Length: 311
Image (tube, rainbow, N blue to C red):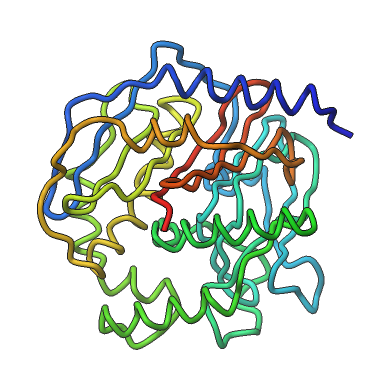
């Protein structure tokens, strides 16, 4: 069992590294403005992201049994490198499409059962035996809600569970607003593919970028940071897609009045609770009057940190 001292060490290491982040000049395209984040203390752990591991065959994701279970999937890592699964990333296939409830590092040559939420209400039959990775992530504003749901669940019983009914309801409302026939998240992304491509090209990651503060119109919407520029560059198009679908749904106006780092500042001043992670490392949950966030810290490295405005 992880000791209190180890938990404290993980929290301290995470805060120290987040304090090294600094912002470059903002980049704006249509409704979204991004402040690229860099660090003077870069690291590059030899992890693979899940899409890379699925592509080279070293990882496999499937239902936990023939009958399946909506909130849980089975991950096998046969490779010699650890594999990083990101909160909100979408997996498609098997009995229904899912998104990850939290960021997980699966050690080399190991298996895990990981917590997920369904983003394809209605289908419960096999479409292939294995999952593949989509190019998309859950809408950022829904990741905010899901992060709060997971934190509440952890406090009650050490479970990384979401409110599945609330997620289905939210997806249905957004499908109507975006004029998409299917409530499945994949349908919304497919319908708005040209706009997604435009945003992805315009807001491509810069050299040495490890994260981003994202603004929709004049309001701060969220922050995502990964351990290294290599990992961030590979993950950013998928993460960005969730912010873009929010922008297309919410149609925000204006530009940020401030170009500071209020989101990161709020995260660093928030209270933190630490829980044993699903895989390797420690799961840090942040709460404050103006921010909700989470970070996975592994061997004193911040694998992935995310933050969103509270309320």
